[in-house]
Length: 207
Ligand code: TMP
Image (cartoon, rainbow, N blue to C red; front, side, top):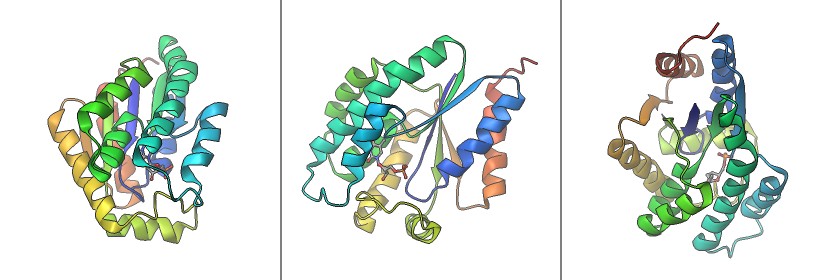
């Protein structure tokens, strides 16, 4: 089973995914977590280029192709082999981030992006996608406060992040059987509990 977590900045995906991994493991499954961009030796190098605050002149199309190059490597080297061993794969971001950020955020053509995504992933789609939905200003505030990496993409204006969030809602609305929206403005404990409830319904206990 392939589960992805998506959301705007500061939605708490990275924190929530480790709790979710524990939960899935307790249900008897082998679990693999991945993070985009990155998750492979090549992908981590691509991540450095994308996030580098000095790369201010980067064209959004360059951004797309870099994200998708890291993703192609991750799918081929990590995700598909794990799925073929019945491992539950939990990914912190996947193709929907490209549609939300480069498509809705930067205004690139969504159909072109879907073609590129299909090529990069060989058509691999998640079975379940959780949208950790957080208010944009609150999310950016959390990012700054956490003292973690503040990257080139965080630095885009608030309106950009608002378009990203709205885009996520459109994507979720257009494929309701794949998406579940989780209110990430709630406390981390409440968010984790809601995530576990959704995922628990999809997992058959095997132990
Ligand atoms: P994160 O590691 O905090 O989730 O940051 C990843 C950043 O990269 C975040 O700003 C979203 C952005 N991103 C895209 O713009 N497009 C993509 O396809 C992916 C995977 C990430």
